[in-house]
Length: 97
Image (tube, rainbow, N blue to C red; front, side):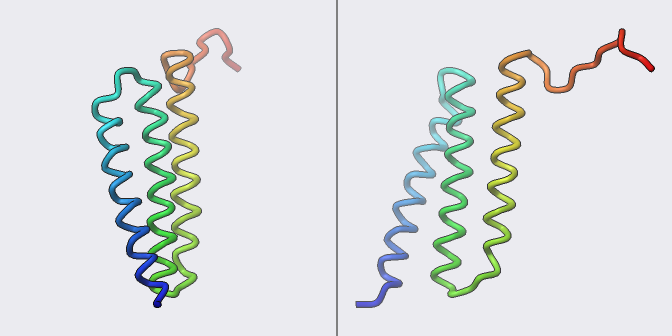
């Protein structure tokens, strides 16, 4: 049996889970639920690109996976700071050089 059938089945399962996560992003009751869902969506996107890389038998998509991972981490960190303090960039007017 060819392994590509298993990869296609895995891609279908990941796509269905991405749809479920997208519903949580849109309908999430709190901002924290939406942030966690966006982070999970980034992980699922990395899995999708990885499965396509295996399916196409190429190594060139690993850079895209790393870039998606970095952007997902930065997005989660920015949302966490926004949830904690209400703003992302703090301007301290008393600290001028």
